[in-house]
Image (cartoon, rainbow over all chains, first blue to last red; front, side):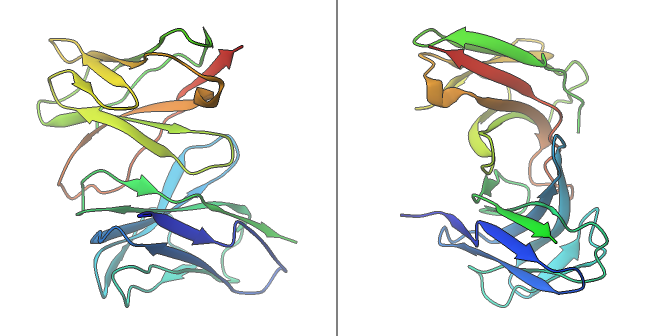
Amino acid sequence: DGGITQSPKYLFRKEGQNVTLSCEQNLNHDAMYWYRQDPGQGLRLIYYSQIVNDFQKGDIAEGYSVSREKKESFPLTVTSAQKNPTAFYLCASSPSSGSTQYFGPGTRLTVL
Amino acid sequence: DAKTTQPTSMDCAEGRAANLPCNHSTISGNEYVYWYRQIHSQGPQYIIHGLKNNETNEMASLIITEDRKSSTLILPHATLRDTAVYYCIVRVSDTGRRALTFGSGTRLQVQP
């Protein structure tokens, strides 16, 4: 099956710890994205990558970091510098930058 | 990207057609109309998109008015699994603006 996978589905972290969220796609898409969704809110863009070894900051990149070493993988690290990390994190991909985006199932991160 | 206006909520009887309206009176000539939906605690799901002509796929139909200032998403035979928040998004494809802007959407409740 082609698609986007995110793991884990639920993640708990102690305050002050870094944590990495996984995003993998086997759709052969060039572009990948990370969004954050807070309860009752819309999606906000954290980082996006148009192509391997390239990525740009989105609207709320502070406290987050990414890498894009492989076309199919775009992991997101939530660092201890992120002041309010508890949220629902969504990864998406698209065939090329600006074309239709397809989303993964999401990871719900809770900071204890 | 043009602003969109959608009703906050709608009900539909199971088996009947669900017609979800969207107003986008400031849409530009090169902006597409996209529809996504989000079932509780899941990632957004792409449904359909169009520029001028009406579009149909296995999930839904999209009817765009001739002046392009409004559109309607039609789910021909709604089921309980179609209960979700539906988002109408207007954006230009293949441009420098790469984030999707999700508004508050329409909460569709399919009743048995």
